[in-house]
Image (tube, one colour):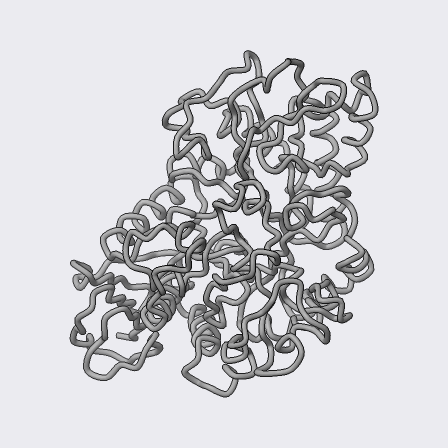
Length: 528
C-alpha cells in the first residue's frame, strides 16, 4: 500500500485565524469544522493545525501549558474529536503541531520548578547558577537567552522568556512526550509536525559562548561547528525512539519536521528509522530565478531519494511574509525592513503573477506539499497593522525593530462584506484591512480565473502527475525557463519578462491567460 504522505498536499490551519464560530473575535475548532467543506473542495489530502493547546498566548500558542488539552478560547477536547471525525468523513487526514523544545512558564512543571531550587522539576528544565547570564546566547526573539529567577539561578529559553527550554537529557521529559504522542494518536490524529525539531538536545558541558552573526540574533552553525544546541547528533536518538512509538499504529502516524538547515543536514532527520519528512525551507527562500529553482529542485530530489523519502515543498507558513507581497518587492529587499517602513511599495500585480506561477510549479513537483491558509486566495501580507494590535513576541522582544509575523496571520476573508468579512460575527483578533473582501472566498468563487480556482484545478490535475515520483528535465530547461516532464505532462515556468512560444500540446492549466506564447512570470501545464 502506498504511504499516503509521499504525495500528499496538506493545508495548514492557523486556528485563531480560520473561522470564529462563537463571535468572540478568535478562530476556534468549531469554526474549523464549519469550514472543512472549503478545505475538502480544494482537493488537498489533509490539514495541519498549528497549536490549539491551553496557553497564555505569549507566542501564538507555541507556549504550551498543557499538551493534552484544548485552550478554552478555541473549544474543548470534544470539539477536537468532532473536528477529527468531520475531517476523516471528508477523506482529510489530520496532522497537529507538537512543541517539544519548551513549555510555557505556566506549565505545571515550570511552576513547580519555580517554587524551590530543590524541586525535582527544576531538573526538567535548564537552570544554572551565576551572577551573570551563563553564556552569550541570544533569544530568537531578541535579548539574552537566559532569564534570572528570584533565587538567583538562570533558566534557558531559546525563544521568549515565557518559553523555558526543556532538558531532553532527563528521562522524564522523554517519557512525557512518548505519552503525548500516544494520547493524540489514540484520538485519531494521523501525524505530527514537530516544532524546532533540530534544537531539542543541548550540549551544556561545558557551557560555552558562541560566535554570533547577523547582529547577534541568529547563531550560525557554520561559525560554530560544534554547536551546543542546534543540530546536535544526540537529537536523532529522540526521533528513532519516536519512530518506534508511532510505527506501532496502523497505519503508522506520519511526521514532518521544522528544520531550518541546508539539505545535507536537513535530510538526515528523514532517515528510515527517524522522521518521514522535513520542510524544505531552502525552496521557500529561493529567489525568483530559474537557475536557483533548478539547483534546489535537483538537489532536494537527490537528497530525499538517497534516504528513501520524498521532498517536502513549502512556499509559505505562519512565520514568513506572504509570497504575493514578497515576490512583488524589488530584488534584494529585506522583508523585515520593508515591514517596518512599508517602503518600497510592492508591485502587487507582479507579485500576484509570480505567486500564481510558483503555485503551479510547486504542485507539479514530485513529493508532498503544504499550503498555508490564505495562499489559495492569493492573500498579500497585511503590512500596515497598527502597532497597538501587534502580538508577535518578535515585535516585543526586538524593541520595535522587527515587525514580526502578525501580517501573515490576519483572519481569512470569507465574504465580500459583513462583520469580519465572514470570519465571525463580531470583529477579529487582528484587524482586517478594508480591501480584504476583494480576496474573499465569495468573490473568488464567482471568478473562474481566480487564485482559488487555480488551486482547485491544479490539485485536481495533480493526481494525474503523481502516478510515479519521477521528474525528467526537458530540453526547454535553460536560461529563465524551467521545464520538466511528469508522466505525459510538460511543466514550463517562465521566470523572465519576455514571452516565449508555447510548446505543442494541450494546455491543461496556466497561471495566466496564454495563447501562442507563454508570458513572463507564468507557468503552464501542457499535455504532450
